[in-house]
Length: 163
Image (cartoon, rainbow, N blue to C red; front, side, top):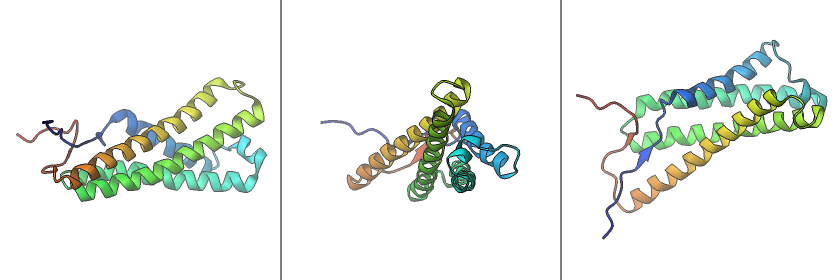
């Protein structure tokens, strides 16, 4: 007989992840404030660049807010899954926005022409895609545990225990 393992969510308080979300939010903020211009995207299409900055600004903000909101719903499986679903949808769009910027950079300047910029933009896109995969996997495990009636207490890992 196999012993079941507890269902755990990845910590929403991870400083590296929150930092990446903050960077993903600040990049379009700079663009919206016209401090940064996504020239490579503008070379492809100016309306695309305008849509990109606002879409990334809104979805990165939602993703960051969802991670922060998770702190207020800890212990409620239904609320936690709703918040993490919201984060997942927003983060998927963030990933696509960074993939579009990376593709525009490669198209306009060539692969490896600006290696640091391409690495950071591509890395943010891949990290966001990885987070979406992680969310999907954890939601799948949670649904499977619910179906089997194996959930008694839900908590995020790396959260301090009350003493």
